[in-house]
Amino acid sequence: MKIIVIGASGTVGRAVVEELAPRHEIVTVGRSGGQVQADITKIDSVRAMFDKIGKADAVVVAAGSLHFGPLAEVTPEQLNIGLQDKLMGQVNVALVAQHHLNDGGSITLTSGIVAEQPIRYGVDASMVNAAVEGFVRGAAIELQRGVRINVVSPNVLQESMGSYGPYFIGFEAVPAARVAKAYARSVDGLQTGQVYKVF
Ligand SMILES: NC(=O)c1ccc[n+]([C@@H]2O[C@H](COP(=O)([O-])OP(=O)(O)OC[C@H]3O[C@@H](n4cnc5c(N)ncnc54)[C@H](OP(=O)(O)O)[C@@H]3O)[C@@H](O)[C@H]2O)c1
Image 1 (cartoon, rainbow, N blue to C red):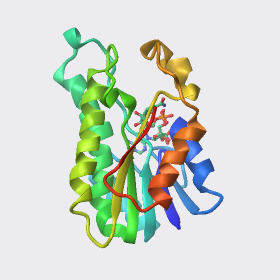
Image 2: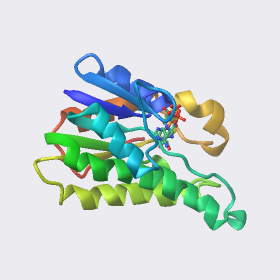
Image 3: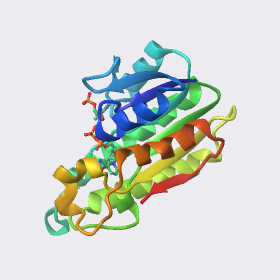
Image 4: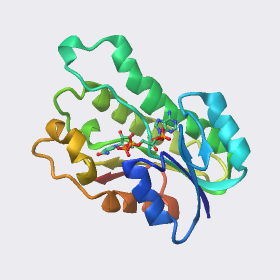
């Protein structure tokens, strides 16, 4: 299959590419890196990306920024970072992908454990990750031509503990390679509307 991996140079994305590349043709996408450049927060950029790549069988999004900070100080603008970047960025990809993917194609988005296990300073992450999962549930029942959509919800990655460690004290970090298996289940499997938790 021809698979578009957005965020391919990231910690999650690199592991996804490593998992999928042995049996699929991969097109890597990033905002600045990758074979094709696109900014998922801009729908025109997403459309241009799909036009440039042409027909594909699957798209994986392993990108999306969030704001981390205390609730007592958070501003609407800061909360909007996650809404515009991680939520609407991924939604933009799904909205365009539904018309571009081949019949029976798949869309795989990314949420995170904080959707259901909140952490200090994580209100944007809890809100946005839960919303991504809500979008996937809603979209799955309406997608046409056999196109599927799922979301992977990773625990914090072992590879990211250097930067995220202080936020995730007490969490059992998981290896990126294990998280990547969930993306493979979504891409190579047949399920739709699923939240694949890798906790
Ligand atoms: N790391 C973790 O422990 C962890 C745990 C749970 C969930 N997650 C989620 O997994 C996703 C990826 O996290 P990560 O740690 O792998 O991030 P990362 O290492 O910072 O990598 C982010 C990737 O996304 C690309 N990207 C960023 N903004 C983009 C945009 N607007 N349009 C297109 N591509 C964009 C970057 O490309 P360029 O470098 O070319 O800009 C890069 O390839 C995020 O949604 C994160 O919340 C991560």
